[in-house]
Image 1 (cartoon, rainbow, N blue to C red):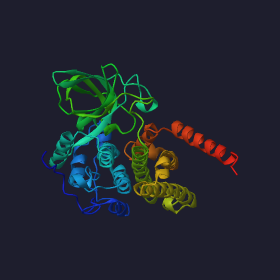
Image 2: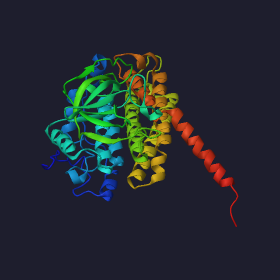
Image 3: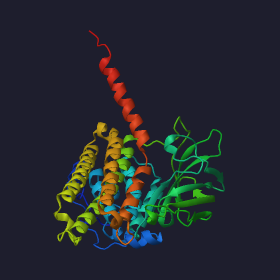
Image 4: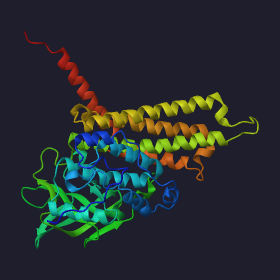
Length: 411
């Protein structure tokens, strides 16, 4: 197999040559990578167009491959550095941030637990060296919903002519039109049935992206439907193909869940930070005739901005701290990531809601970005784990711990 080629990491993204676990931990102390000062996020939101040029910028900065493992020639960035990347991207263009997150999570999972067919992953790395090679897992279906809540996928793979042929429909497929690889969760037509993730390449015959995404928030994310009509996949290009258990390969391990929860929390905290920054600028610029001074001089607004900033600082710190603990191998921290997501995303949504309330009509005017930040930050609530699942699991754990404390101890 040829040696995979990955982009040379830039100083802003590389944790260090020959990175190890300690190098990954050092990377969590770095600031966010340098990003372009201008973004076309507003235009892409208005037209619901895919931000291709944003991914080109991210590729040139080495952001799309920041989590590629050192053994594959990549920087090997840990979760601590990844949350900083996603927070910065979320502030600039959350659609770019979201698809980048899915790509980074894919490389990070392969770095932790190799599962890709080696040749298929080497091919992905070669594509990543040449240009933006975006990857996402396609799991949600019209009837199934999210497989995290259980159930077998309706998308089916059958053997024919030395290939798997995949047939089905995936919905909410973020970045669909721009993906290089789609990781399709499907079942086989065998007896007994097996489930696994099939590596589908863009432009495969029988693959169609239907432009169904017409959402209030993250309009540029291209989260369209993907229709598969006997799409061929080489027999070996399957990850974790096995008979289903009680939950057929759908529920992520604690480390994967922590990356998803904390990475996406950082993204939406970036959105909320952008909303705060617009608000503070507006309050300095807005000078009502009756007041004769900027709104920023009024104690009421100073106190309100202080509440927003304190909440975001606390949420940012919580995400960063837990991410560093996950990088250090703290299993308890990984298990708490869902609860931190709940707290962080609630802080992000509340902060933007407060900004809108403070600015009134100005905040909801399309010419101003605050209404876009508000629509985008609301999407934080739809990502797994969702609040009801987090609260149920957290409550059960607390109740079980109470039983353990009250159980009689042996002599």
